[in-house]
Amino acid sequence: MTLWVLDTDHISLLQRGYPVVISKVAAVNPSEISVTIITIVEQMYGRLDVIKRAKSKQELVTAYALQRFRQL
Image 1 (spheres, rainbow, N blue to C red):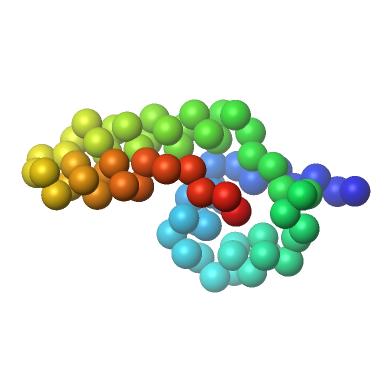
Image 2 (image 1 turned 180 degrees about the vertical axis):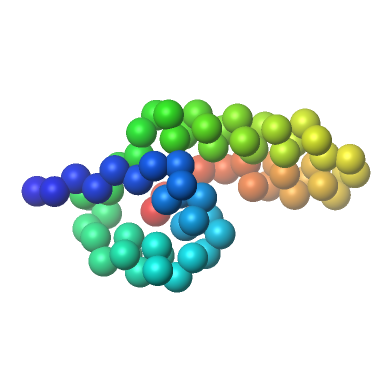
């Protein structure tokens, strides 16, 4: 079994909907995909930074709504 480890760049591209990355990841068995704890922490810090910089209630609501972990 081959294990595919997605780094922060891959995850960011997936979140932004890049079709090439989406199709490549979709072609792999989900049980063979992993991310590092470093990627999870970088994603969390990035999202917390967006929350911290929110200037309006709507920006804050949007930032919190995006603060969820999605399964690939």
